Image 1 (cartoon, rainbow, N blue to C red):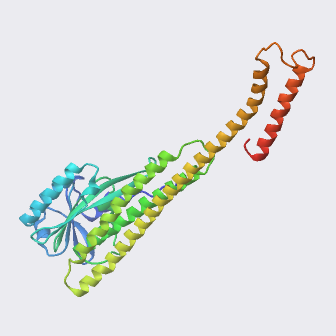
Image 2 (image 1 turned 90 degrees about the vertical axis):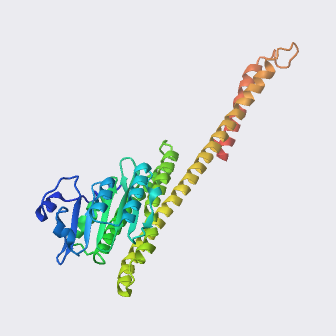
Image 3 (image 1 turned 180 degrees about the horizontal axis):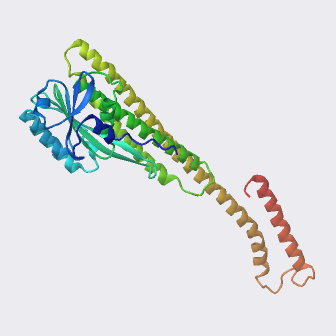
Length: 354
């Protein structure tokens, strides 16, 4: 199986060169400048007062609520975010059920998007979620799970990788494109697992592939649950800008995200159908094997029936039975039984039953 490359991780050494060191579990803040995105001190009031776009990465979901209050978000947004975080906290591993888009009365946008990563060793798709709040000049984000989407998107911006749009929407674009890239890695890993399962189904190994097929179908369904919510975000994002030029720029990369998500969903759907065909083929193979076994059993039963019948007749021990006192009766009976069995064996061999 192809081993998907490791998901991009946050480069601590690169970060240390660009800014001061902070604790690993502390909130991180980035600000857009003329030279691109740079990390700044979250405690700096001067940085927070600037009008440039800012991106805050909270250490966890509770810290996201605290960051919303610290950065002066409207009370309506803060309450809605607290409710969202509470629901996500009780969701456990069923985070995909909470892939929602909400807009507070203050006009701020709240989103939760499932994330996914693939474990090749166990053939499992693991899910998490990214939650973020979007305002005009600020985006707050937090992540659950080990997909490292925020760190990957951060590296994309810090390394000056070309990313469409500007300001806060540039961060959103980096996040969605990172989610799409990691979903593609998941699809690639599942595709390799499906190929291996197909080889197992049509091989001569005695391992039963039914359990593996059902496991992969479940993992594909989980992967699709992580990809499909991306499409539900696009209409809300498209309505973020009233300016015609900005709306055109926004839709240009949203269309790219939508096309990529649609393509991944089609690939996953195709793999799911292929697994269904494999299951049908395997059940057909089992049925054919059972029929072949039944033919063999029937052929041997027919050959055994002949000597059984002859022995049964001569074992009735009646006083007046022909050939009982004949010298050649016993050898003749053996020759007769052997000849009939040989004829039946040849007939069954020629018909393919043996």
